Image (cartoon, rainbow, N blue to C red):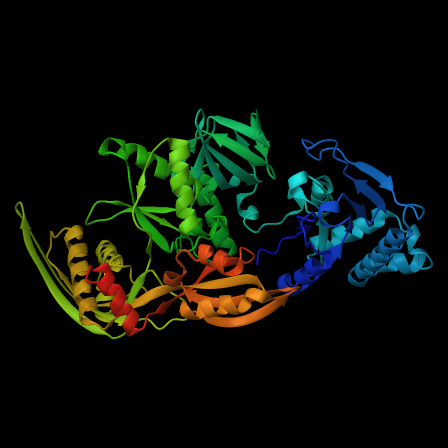
Amino acid sequence: NHQIPRICFLNKMDKTGASLSYCIDSIKQKLMVTPLLLQLPIGEAKNFKGLIDLLTKEKLIWCPTSDMDDGRLFEKIPLTEMDNSEIFEAVKHARNSLIEQVADLDDEFAELVLGDYSENLDFLPPGKLQAAVRRLTLARKAVPVLCGSALKNKGVQPLLDAVTMYLPSPNECCHDFLQWYGDDLCALAFKVIHDKQRGPLVFFRIYSGTMKSQSAVHNINRDCTERMSRLLLPFADQNIEIPSLTEGNIALSVGLKQTATGDTIVSSKASAVAAAQRAERDAGKKQGDSNGSESLILAGIDIPEPVFFCTIEPPSLARQPDLEYALSCLQREDPSLKVKTDPDSGQTILCGMGELHIDIVHDRIKREYKLETYLGPLQIAYRETIISSSSAADTFDRTVGNTRHVVSVKLNARPLLAEEAVITPVIEYAENIIELLPKSLQEAVDNGIHMSYLQGPLIGFPLQNVVATVQSLTVQPGTSMTMVSACVSRCMHKALKKAEKQLLEPVMKLDITVCADHLSRVLGDLAQRRGSIHEIQSRQDDKVVVASVPLAELMGYSTVLRTLTSGSATFTLELSSYEAMNHQHQAALMNRLSGLA
């Protein structure tokens, strides 16, 4: 989707069962790309000790001198037929296959091979082959593949060389938005960490312009201007202070208090406005037709909605501010973590992507912020919708001080038939009122409908796939916009209660890798969990079960799966969709949540 050149690194070649040929086949089938194998491993599993570079025909050998050896030192040895004839022939065959593969994809290289080196490919210079592989990588026609073991730093040095050799430099990248910024600063905040001495540290990728220390920058996402105090150049765990940094670099800034992961940073608000005007001009739009700044926000991290939530409490009320500070810091670092306050009980609600995610957050609060917190029982984030239309009318008449506030509204709620879940309100207005409705009044109505969306009519979960149509609205002069929002929200709740309601539960896509001996037990367990089996794939000696299972049935599943398979199976889990519950399960859930069961 991003249309960027890539390279593949096959890690853990020292692991038992590691298979180079299977990885290459998997890249072809799953990633749908053409892999160019540039290295062969020397040894397998525990005997893995190095690599053979197919381009230069050199052996790269890592010989650890002690258990503390970090793999920094390795030896380059030219490969000769005298070393090992079998390895020499395998390398010769693999290199010839690589040359033929590259020649099929690159016409310039094919002419070179057919013209000068057709009789003996062994004499083909490595530089010519490297240049051809780079052209194919930049054109996204193929993907170079390297291998190694990152834990022991075997193969990491050639990987870093391959990054500079085959991937584009910042000057060769062409992003559409850069033409609108020109030489002005444009950067993406991709990571935030909190340091006890220096406070929040923000990592930036600079796309254009120059970032300077002691300078003010504008955050487009949050529409605020901040000043960074220091600018650092990160080298692993060492940071070097510098006065400025140019495009293509990774920068680390100190002093930004509001910038979070995924935010877009520019030099000033005027720069963002000027870039937005250029973007609108290029798109052929009239100035002011849309918010051009939105089109200038860089693609951050796509975060799905949380599916688990629980309450979190400090050890005492005196430590509540400490808990709020810790959670605010963690939210800046981790956009998938959501924190909200229950409007009825006032409790702090922690929303995350899974059991492990919330456990990690809980442990970090204890370890990094020295705060013992108490978690409530883990609950699932259900949603609600309606399956029939209904209408309601409401009148709000209240006198506050010397001002009388009168609002009358009539609206209709109906289900939205859409293939994908729509969690934001779809608001429509009758033709007879939309033209006469002032912008401030329309914002108040929209705000009221948004508030009603947060708590559904069944058990208070957020709504999904509901269309609200405002049919009539009468507001007495002098009425507060807050009163208009309150009246609309109350009327919307009335309409939702009249409609036929439906609970929706999160259904997860579950991939289980299990050996054939334990397959029947796993399938039987999934059947008891209301699971639907989509397919069973073969992966070497293992089976991969692809299934859809309601999240409610997967609480503590990792422990159960280990027990069923003697610890040999693994699984991955991701949100697939929200689906309607049947009447029996819906009734049981409502009874349990209301304390009747």
